[in-house]
Amino acid sequence: MTLFTTTLTSPVGALRLIASHDALTAIYMENHKGAPVLDASPREDLPVLREARAQLEQYFAGERRAFDLPLAPVGTPFQHAVWKALREIPWGSTWSYAQLARHVGREGAARAVGSANARNPLSIIVPCHRVVGTSGALTGYAGGVPTKQWLLEHERRLTPR
Image 1 (cartoon, one colour):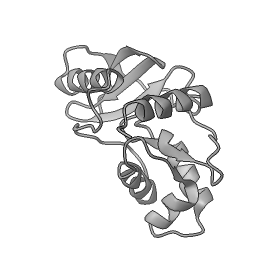
Image 2 (cartoon, helix red, strand yellow):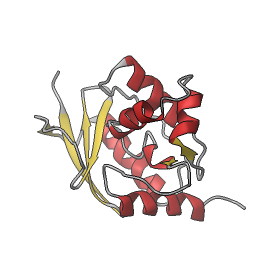
Image 3 (cartoon, helix red, strand yellow):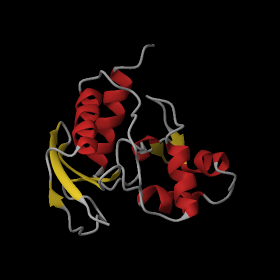
Image 4 (spheres, helix red, strand yellow):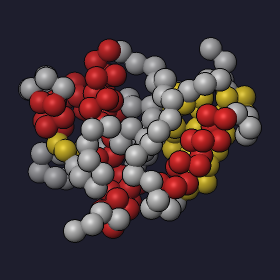
């Protein structure tokens, strides 16, 4: 598969957006833990990358709460089930790994869910930052815990009380 990339400067640092001709496949942050090395050609004019940039800019400006993009992350069926469930966590909310495991019908599989969550290639758009420890503690995040904290605070600031 031929891949294309562009970079977006954001409040949480540079984001590397990666897409095929017709779908977004990954978003990686600076120093993204576990990010694969992908051979992708720079391409500013690819429609899916332009739209992803625009929607992410709207998110950071507080103008967008949900993303409407064609997505094509690479993963196992279980990972896809977890990533789909991540998109069901409401804006400004958090779920524990145990809650997420129950939601995907795998009660008691919090560690497996955590592993799938950690491999989410579409940070922010598939909101893995909304998953926290059972105590509410901010646990690991591929983009770093300070980034996770910023994203959660950003969403909470914009959530009506």
